[in-house]
Image (cartoon, rainbow, N blue to C red):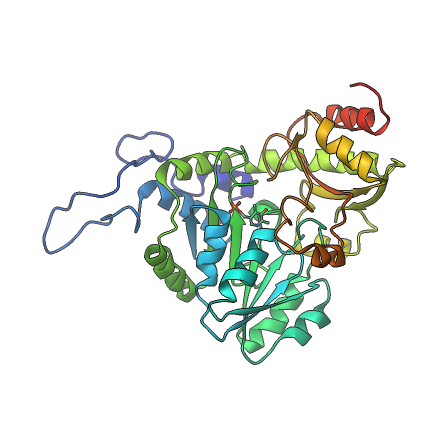
Length: 381
Ligand SMILES: *Cc1c(COP(=O)(O)O)cnc(C)c1O
């Protein structure tokens, strides 16, 4: 089955009881049992809920994993997954990891005795030299946020496998439509389902998918024990959003390409980060491991004044945190996604004060360009 068909027919396609096209919202906390000797498939909705299960099966299938798990947020998925590690374990993490992940690792997991070393993951040498005897996990985002740096996932797997290090990839920017890390040999895929997977800026949701049954058992135990599960209403909405993932990504990605081309001719734009550009340092690796470059890009502007005008005057692109919705979102990493990263650290990483990130939605790109043109050149729009 091809991806578009799998989105519609890959999971549970209807409610077996009524034939309804779609799995209903099972808004219940508990399930009545028939027999003292044998409980039914469902007993308590933290453990299992049919609405959540439908989403979990769907994402597991799309990522080619053995099992999927839905959590209350991307951070809940990431934090719950990181609970597979124990005090004394060490992680190697890409240095422009999502700000919330940086925070949870550096402020919470460090306190629990799980240490992380942050490296420039575009360099295999840096990853390799950060590995210690107690390194148990490598945590990556590719393309990364907000600089769209690319990590060679196959090469990292070659480093990790012989040392039985678990490779985890936050695949939020790519989605399984464009990149399937488990097929490349990685062990765990994570998502902020809040972004492209749900796609409508109306749900907070997180997902984890594992390749092996063994990791599946461990995360299942944590999901039920720790309890940061996704509710049935949000499971339903996310599953509904997921069905249009391919058409949304196709359109947003095409528009992103058009916008990048236009930006590259603008004197006020001093640098563009988008792996689809042939001059992007990660372009070749991106082409070898993903089926596209997605709909998120970032760029640097000539001054703080232009930056402020673009962020404050944009009407079509919402000045907001988040990404991956039907509406374009323009954000300011230094004060938004990466506010949790100390200023010195941020500068060192290249997240400057004139860097903006654009997540391209489903508007006509001509309108988005016309608006930016007006702002850059002081025309009224
Ligand atoms: C938004 C985001 C997260 C966190 O997800 P929430 O759903 O906001 O908790 C993690 N990783 C990436 C790449 C994100 O963009």
